[in-house]
Amino acid sequence: MKRRSIITSALLFSLSLSVTYGCSKSTDPVEPAYTPQIGDVKLGFSAWPGWFPWQVAQDKEIFQANKIGVNLKWFDNYNDSIAALNAGTIDANSQTLGDTINSIASGKDIVIVLINDNSTGNDKIIIGEHIKSVKDLKGKKVAAEEGTVDHFLLVQALKKVGMTIKDIQFVPLETSKAADAFAAGQVDAAAVFAPFTTKALKRPGSRELFSSKDFPGSISDHLVFTRKFVNEHPEKVQAVVNSWFATIDHINVGKNRDEADAIMAKRAGVKMAEYKDYLDGTKIFSLEENLEAFKSGKDNTYLSTAAVNAGNFLFENGLIKTKVDTSKLFDDRFIKAYAAKVKSRS
Image 1: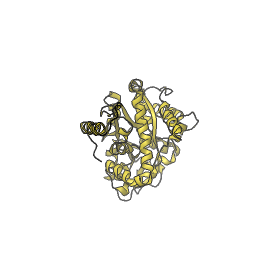
Image 2: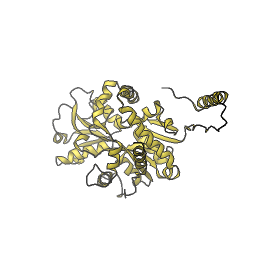
Image 3: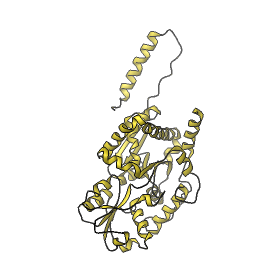
């Protein structure tokens, strides 16, 4: 759906006022409608199924319905979106827990306000036909993007069978290039995430060896703001959070599902059938699941514990130089405020 420009909206509003005053004798003042400004929030996202709903929010004008103007910025390279948030050229980004902790370790002050999803299979270790088990990776070339959740997944898979990253020939490649290298037969295995899994699996005889479904809660994805923006514009953060939940509600209405999937498949650059294959591999978190995950708990389904474990992984593998304090990383006031709003309606 083509979005109306601010100028067009203003003109239509002016015309509507003219009609109202021409047809009514009332002299009561008319409160002007809020016109979202495109630059209210600069929000980044990239190729991951749990983040494609942002495209639905834009195309279906859900941001505007929640009185917030969002400059939605697409990044072909996920790492570029993280760099943009760290540099302050965007206000918010969708990114993983591990990458957020990595940024904190480098001195950035950012805040997680929302869980978009957990990976439940869309992060995969894909192997060639000559490999039968994780142990068969010993001495083999395995490509993954260093420091990412897929690197983390690979390390966890190796650890489970008593191996370490030193037991393989680790080939550090950006995720898209890792998928390309595997598809071309240049490496024996690749740890990649959807939609790049589709590209990797085009190699004849390839298959999934391991995936994030084997480690529940270990790979979570979030809406992250700079703390400066949260402190200065909490009402805008709230509007974006509200828009996210409104978008998920919109998608889950039966009659909207196919249209929403078509929007997300187009953004992913894959066919509808391929996109539907991703649905079971990403668990979009409901409001209730967000509220629960922000509480304290002893396993990775709780953010506080998952953050400690992710921080330890990064430190132990030399990906960050010092351990980080994640106690101030999470801010659940916005999901709580949305929950209170929903409750007041019922």
